[in-house]
Image (cartoon, rainbow, N blue to C red):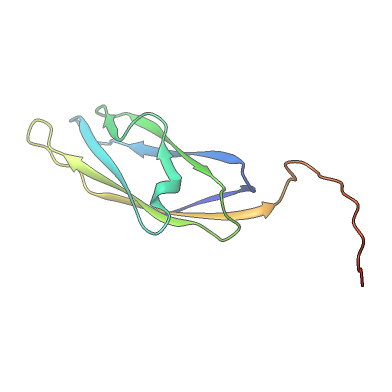
Length: 116
């Protein structure tokens, strides 16, 4: 699964990841970002996720575009045992692409092009 973040340079984008629990037991996960640009991605509600039995939850992943080059990382959700039940480890590839650049401000100046 790949989650793509697109936007303007210096913009912040939030994507939702839907996690389903089809079983009859509660599942708990610890989230970890790994990879070259792992520091650029964050989870808005902490790094622990609990999914009630027969329910689904949405996890918000936030990314701020700091560089023009594409950012890459992997979101790994590692299961914690709850009542002796372990969930499978989940992984999501995270990729970004700057679509446009918005100027932060403008500076006007006058200068001669060439002087002897």
